[in-house]
Image (tube, rainbow, N blue to C red; front, side):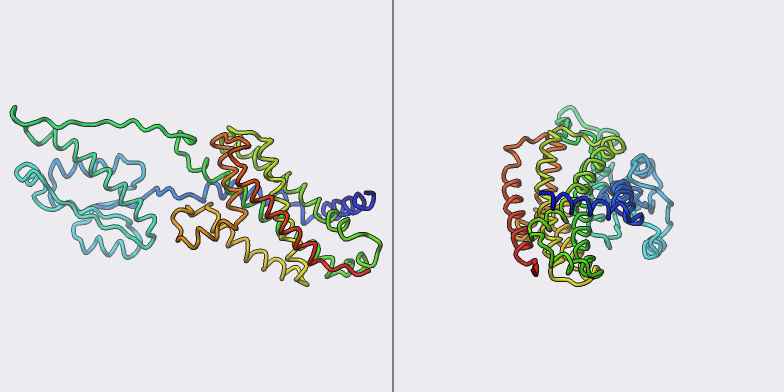
Length: 373
């Protein structure tokens, strides 16, 4: 026990003695949390909108005003011809072009129908899909009002009935995207910092030659591994604490569930990451090698965790692979506990899988660590 305490004290002294390491551990992750939580969003805003009004009527102007009133669209200008509008879209100056044909109002009055042309820059397919939904909703809203304004119904005709829907948004009443992203980004930072630090720490001992000196001492393998990894477990829990405080104070993310439950799960998850870091370090000789291998796996885990891309939208084979992704379970648990208020029984499936993952990874790491006596 004294040996483990000595190694832990040595590691903490070594970490805090390195003045260049402290900002990397504590300052940069917090800046990343603040910046990424504001930048990483799938919300499409400030859509550059232009129009071609060939009708110049009261009805066409009313439709354009609908887009001007929408906060998602930035109505830039009117183009006299389609050719000029296409040229502007080619240069990236415009995202959406609405073309109102001639006799638009006349067709609404006489034919009881009208046609509109919408051109959308679809280089970013996801954004184009969202923009199409926005445009369709505005036109549908305009269509409901134009029926009342322009079409005269006789007494024998059935008056149109408007059905009003009142949506109720659970878990994120304000539809604030930061509420969805902050827990996931917090998972990302805790994972990356603990994995990189634990992976490079032992490799650093190899580079400076102290690992060989430790290997020939009476220190047992288990004592050495616990002593080396425990400080990074504490750092990971500390990052979670600071991240939760910032999530509440800066982003006002609700924390409906139990904090103790979040810490319980995180303490097990960090063991998985520390085991991965140790396993990587056992097969690398330099810090650069350890960092590149760790980065290779962490990118795959993050992209397939459901943090940025819904798992339900992935191919079936990819969804099967996500079952072996520990970060997926951490993201799910953080959002379930923080936003839904899920209890212990709700996260038991994720907890059990993560615990099994921790036992396997640490078992492999200990088995692959070679200690000479």
